[in-house]
Length: 375
Image (cartoon, rainbow, N blue to C red; front, side, top):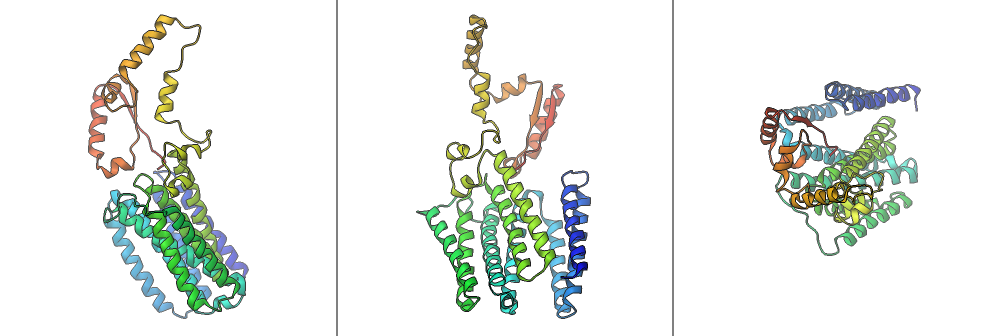
């Protein structure tokens, strides 16, 4: 591998990392987007330089067509539809990685380094197809076209595990036989991975959908990284790894913010029972019942008994602090209020109502802040 390729790859990956860093703040996010786009443009130009002029006209036509579609989509999509747009892009990224891996097999590139190339091509094909299938269902759910509610078949978890295990066995078999039966095994891998993605996303509910979108984003990056290994492209492998790691970090942050583990999301456990026990105590946020319990702890021996009894009676009359009936009085008595808009508010299109509430509270000289939830 030429030294100039390694240098260019380091600069491109550093550009992507810098773009992600800039996008952590709303003030610099637009510069982060521009830096990421510039890094991608350099990667495309360098890919043409390395591969030569063969097929450059066809490639440019597809790039122009994709750019036009992307510009139209970016300008027309509403913010309320951003989650399904991201899901669609994740799916297309997975499909692109699967096509790259499939083309490496069809063009004979996987024959050069037997087991390594065949295993990387087969694995990238499987992960990319799984990402595409899962993202397709996620987009349908988020856009309200079909399957909005969690859909679970009998023995759903067992069927999903069996499908994924079968795909893994097919990948290993295709690798160890160095593609001797690839005309039979590759269609089976594609079908199994597609079914795995569909089954994985079918039973995900609306509240957990941002987590699965982030996970699919990570899988699309992992598929790209493995496809980069298959076609011996260090830039594709490096940038794919960056996307995969960033997606996994974001998925973990979301799970911690929702007091859920990734296993609980994928298996459909209740967030109030099994899933909470799977998140370490020092990492999860306190629930509303835990917060109420802190306020209603037993009085110490040094406290005045009559005062503590009065406090307990007042609390029993007021009821739990998180009940919907008590919310207006709690807001009326509060001096400082923090509103944390979530995805549910966006889906309900309650933006104007929230703004009106904040204006009304500020007129009563209350201190109002807005927070950002990680999800």
